[in-house]
Amino acid sequence: MNFYRSILSNTQDIENADKNIRKCCNAILFFPTIQFIGLLFLKQFANLIDVVVFLLISIYVRKYKSRVISVLFLIMAIISFVLTISNRSGGSIYLAIGLLWVAILMVRAVFFWNNYYKMKLKPQKTIFLSALSIILFFITTFLGLVVLGMFGDKMTDQEFESLSGTLVYSTFLISIIFVFSGILPYSRGESELPVD
Image 1 (cartoon, rainbow, N blue to C red):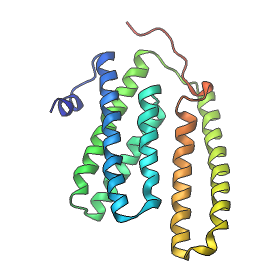
Image 2 (image 1 turned 90 degrees about the vertical axis):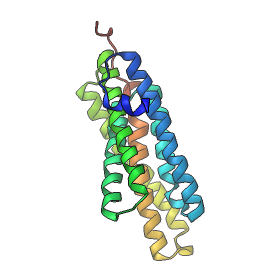
Image 3 (image 1 turned 45 degrees about the horizontal axis):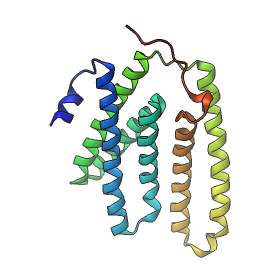
């Protein structure tokens, strides 16, 4: 219950922002665990990439407080919510609402944390990192499609199209996550003294 109260309240101090980021990252790990179990039962192994993406988001947002990745997660949560509503999936609606709620809280807490420490990412860096993620996306997609093409004769056309779509989707997300995660030294914002 305290978690839901904290979602509705304003983030007023840095300790609260840190705590909310940790709670959100823990909650993000909860969703792929449920999804992972469901996919194993349904034997839909191609969709396991969502589990990997959620895991990466949880790790990198917790460690580096990346605004780009938290916004990316919010977009994913909104898309998931819209698709769930349009498909009228009964029990999944509650998960989609929970995911969206967690995404909103995480974005608020991450932006508060970055504003508190005046973490600034200059426009030149943002353009460079965006170009780098696009280049990485094209390289990994090309290599993935080449490998997939080598095994294409063993799959039906429908399986090949499904795996190709999953590959493009996953390489796109992972390219953005990798470049903007904070792993690369150039991808981190420039820190100043905390605001008083």
